[in-house]
Image 1 (cartoon, helix red, strand yellow):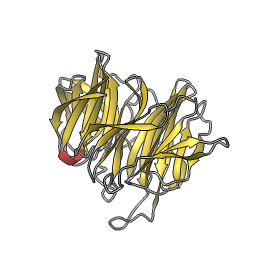
Image 2 (cartoon, helix red, strand yellow):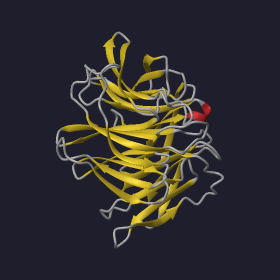
Image 3 (tube, one colour):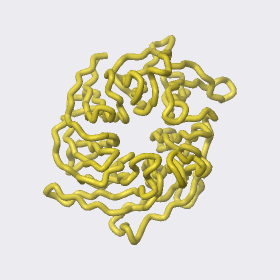
Image 4 (cartoon, helix red, strand yellow):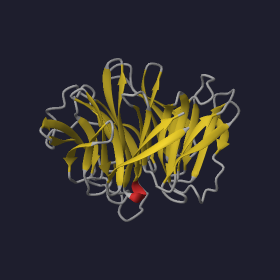
Length: 352
């Protein structure tokens, strides 16, 4: 694996990313954790527009299906201790570098969210880290996951008319992790918290019940499902515990239980605060890319070599917070990393 790095921006506490199609052009967004801007980039990394200057506090962004550049984003989640005013907003391009920002729903402590599609219906899943606090590092109030049908037309939603959410599951302590996992022809969500890893499956039709499966009881900061070895059964990759230093892959046993198969062998002092995670196909192989914000602050790619798991470095000493992948117009695999600890947004073109 060869990696060519290109630094495209220096953004204070850069954090969240999302792909975006705007007027038929493939672009991507990068936003900051603190009171800093959100930028729109062309596929090649050229800066196109500033979407907003503030308020920041952006943990998650995702395009609105069929929205031609419109996207949803969290605002005002600045830290686990400063996110009571967090909410999800709708950003809609108005042309000539202008964007309209409206409230979709106020969701205190919302850390991650996603849009899941099933049978032509889009569902919003909202993951809140906790439900309240009274002092710094107060974890007495567990978080929850909420759901709603996401209407095709979002034009009527604003501060005075917000989308109504329904509780899907509560009592989720340190509800931190979310990843999108397509399965059986529709989207599901993998959510990690202190109680373990859960899979949320939207209903087959609006009004139906969500199915929630517990995959593992090990505390998880983030989890992914990916069939590394090609046996038709997905492995479970877990970062543990909350903002933890343990990186483990679990395999399904004959009884359908996830059991430990492999653990990243580096000393956990070197892998403190594992945070960046992306899982999918890279160079034609199932790959889990992971980065940590403390210790050695490295970013690695994990693959199955036919006998065991192999790792390669993507970058060193950068403190990556999040990773995103796409295939560019030339057919090349590209990773984008928000290297939060050095305020650096980097593109990595990965080739054989």
